[in-house]
Length: 363
Image (cartoon, rainbow, N blue to C red; front, side, top):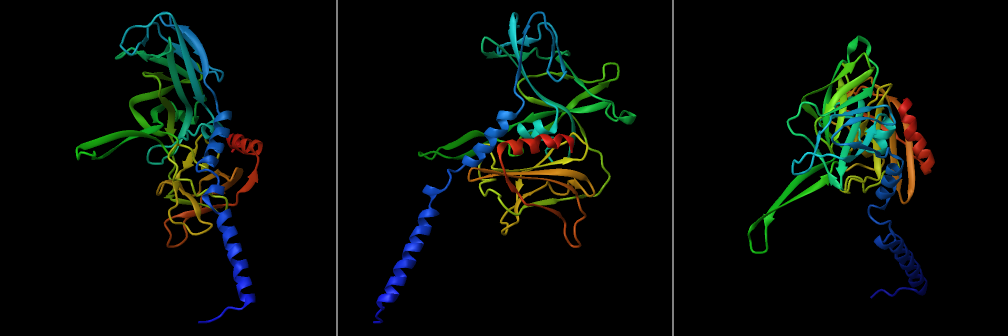
């Protein structure tokens, strides 16, 4: 048997101590709690997001409500009903949340893109709720009036926005898991999960907003409450399209994509130049090497040659990081079916991050 010298034993003891120290520092007990960074980022954004505006109106008489952004909601008499279908009279509390600019889309996580990743030019996103005696109200079914909405807007040259599609927005999706119980009986459990893209927009059939030249407004009708609606037109472009791989060369939080609470610690947004449109890149790159973590767009949806600005955001170990980067979407390299954009995120405080978000409005 080989005998170790005292010097060798001493070296081994030092090495063992070093290994033990590393294990202690890297242990789960000393790591940030799972989801803490995502929670920190979400709390900052929602605290500065547009809040609900509250109004009161007589249900029998109806009337007109004007939001702080100048949008008019024309409420017909006797339009509200209870959950059982009974007509509503007396005071009704109206709550309205309105998104009209890109910074608000970021803060409320309500980007403007279709289910398949196409870009939408937004004239406004709205959520309207009516309550009486702490009970949610609905609108009279099968009525042809609804709540008339008039959004301040400018006519696009040539009247390209004379007729704009309406979209409905879902912020959660429902899924069902099937299996067997402890006595081998079929069981199905239905649950809801927050949409990773913030909101899933789907076009509402036969519903359009019409430009009103006399009033300088985009006019449409709400026929239901307690859901997001969007007055948007598709971005028109004839350029060939590509897939964009967006690499966070640093400070990408690896919990992104594994948390299903709707809170994400790393986020990426893209605003085309001079267009009231916001894309959210939420598809996480799978099995990336170091420095290639990040997101990718929907496949073949981003126009080559499009100018725009990205905002990359991360929260890692209690620190915010960000980079705002203006780009021109490049042509894929020979043999590739994608183009790339890389980000070098730098530490920022909360105030600086909010300034970067607000700055996206003018990009």
